[in-house]
Length: 248
Image (cartoon, rainbow, N blue to C red; front, side, top):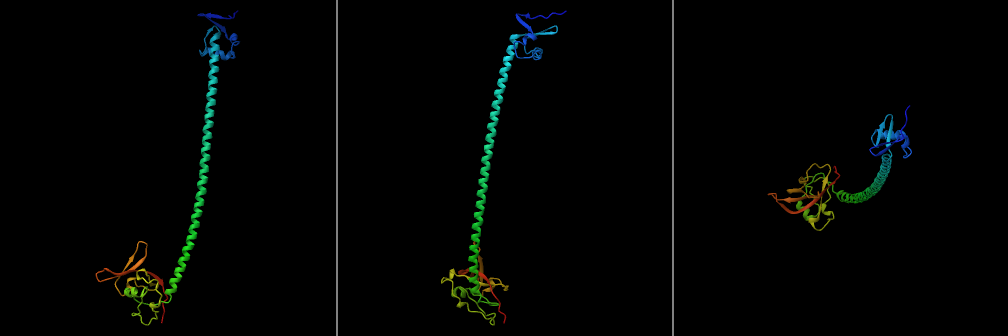
């Protein structure tokens, strides 16, 4: 018949059985037994019974409670930081979304303004070109040679247009001297050359030796040259206008 010892004293320390130790802490017998086996508390095994040091068990419980409280605080701090980071990220995304919407709206407004100015400018330019083409066509409509040559000297003297019908005397041509000059300064004049069915080049339309020049802005001009190829006289701009042939 076995007897149970209520307490043991080893090396000046009093050890109690586990069933008595449960009265001093909030742990169960199984948990205290596991702590004793894992050597986390001061304990000894006698026969089939574990004896533990009550002070060691209480200290473990206190330390465990403090560690648990510390873990809770760390977890709470980590959650707060995570929430702050999320808030900052959401705020930044919101700002970026607002900026993107503002930029998109500005881009749309700028596109509409550019298109509007382009349409207005195009209409204004077309109106000016239409009026200019009508004026040129009205002036050139009365000149209908089938083949003629221009003298640059005559063009300079009689500004702005000169014509000769020596090669086609039978073709009725209105004298270009009857056309009102654009300016009194031949240097600021403009020559009207026939365009359409004529196959001759620009230089072949003049009886003098001429050279065709093109300015940086794309304006075509002619100047009379001497036998050595040097320019003589004023440089006259010209435009080609459509003409109607008169068949006799």
